[in-house]
Image 1 (cartoon, rainbow, N blue to C red):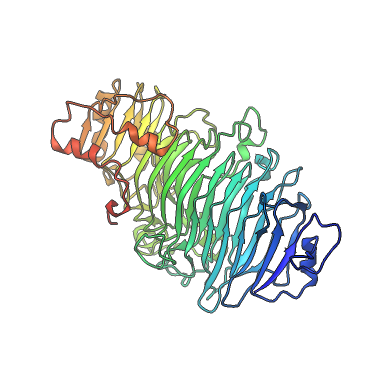
Image 2: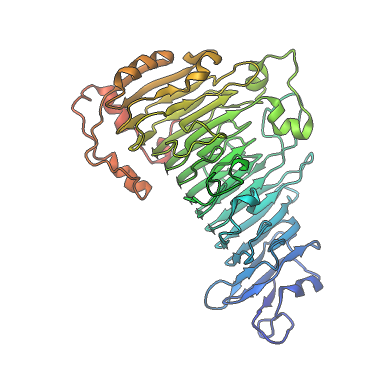
Length: 550
C-alpha cells in the first residue's frame, strides 16, 4: 500500500515519503491518488486547511481500505478549517475509507459548515465501508450558537435515487464538544412504491455509532434518516444491523434558545438529542442523555419520529431533559414522502389502512429499561412547547410499548402531564395503541397533575387504547385524583403505593450505574403480593438476552 506523509511543521516541501514529507495537505490535489493509500499526518501538527475533494481522494473502489490517520509521537494533529465558511473535508464521493486519530477544530469565528461532509457510495455489493474513529471535534461557544440553525459536525448524505444501496458506515470512539449538532446520516429515502411504505426500500444497512460522547452541545447528538437493519436479531455485532450504543450526551446550555437571552429562541428547530426518522429495526442501547432544554421545541431525550417501525431503545439513563420519550407520526402533508415525492393519502383509503397496514405511520417500537430522572419539569415553558411531559405519543402511532422504565421526579409540585397525546387537526386520531407496562412513576412533592393533557381528551377517539399494565404510581398528595383518572384508560394491576426509597437524592445521580443503585435500596412492606414484587424485580435487567421479544 502506498503511503503519503505530511508534516505541516516542515519548512521545505518534500516528496511525500517518511524522510521527506509534504508540508501541506494541498499537495494531495496535484497527485493522482491510487488506492489503496494511507495518508499520514504528523502528530503534534496544528494547521489550517479546507480539503475540497472533487477528484476521488476519498473514493476507493479496491478491495483494501484506504486510510487517513496520524503518525509519529505526541498528540493527534489539530486540523482547523481554513475559514468559517468551509468544511474541513468536503467530498462528493467517499467509499472504503477510514479517517482516524485526527482532531478537528472550528475556526475561531465559528465553523458554519459541517466539519466532515460526504456523499457515501456503495460498491457492487452495496457496501460503503466507511469508518470515522478516534477523532475529536471541537467547536467554540460561537460555533455552537443557536442562530446557526442545525449544522451537523459529521454530515453524510446518500443520494436519493433508485437502486442506490449504501451500507456499512461506522462512527466510533469520537468526542464532540461545543458543536452545534453531532452526527447526521441521511440514507436513501427513495420509495420502492408510492403505494406503501412496506419493507426497507433502499435504506442503509449497517449504520453504527458506538462509544461517542457529545458535550456542551445544542442540537441533536445523533440523527438517523432512512437507516435500517437487514436482519431482526437486534445485535450490533451483525455487520448489517444499524443503531447506536455506549453514547453520552450532555447539553446544559442556558445561553441558547432562551427567550430572555436569545432573540432567536422562538425560531429554534424541532430537535432531540437522539432521534431517527424513516428507520426500521434500529437498536439503541447503553446511553446517558442529560440537560436537553429547557424551553426548546421538543428536546425529549429519545424521539421515534415519522415512519419508524420495529425499533428498540433500551438500557439508558436520562435526566433534566424537556421531555423523556416521544413516538410521533403525522399526516402526509408533513412527511418526507410528501415534500420529496408528492405522495398523498388517497381519499378512498382509511387511516388504518394507510398509516398502519401500509406503514406510513409509526409503530411496533419498544422503549425499555430506561431510568428517567427529573425529565419534563416545565422549567421554562414557551409558546412553542407549552407542555413538558414524561411521554409523548402523537397522532398515527401504533402498538408502541414502554416497558420496565422508571420515571422519577423529585422537583415538580404541580402543573405537569405524564402523557402528551396530541391528535391531528383533521380527524382526531391519537395513539393506537400505546402500552405502558412494568413501570414505576414516582413524585416526591407532586400535588396536582393530570395523567394526560385534558384539552385533548375529548378530541381523541378511544383513550382505552392507551393500556397501563403492572405499573406503580406514587405521589403522596395526588393519590385520590390519580385513581379517578386511571379510569380513562385500560388498566391491569396498577398499584398506587409508596415504593419507599431508602436513599433517594433530590438531584440526579451522576451515572447509569449510580442510578441503578437507587433501585437496590427499595423497601415497601405494602408490596406483599407477588405482582408488585415482580414489577420492581424486573425494572432493570441489563442483559441484552433478557430483553423482551418484539
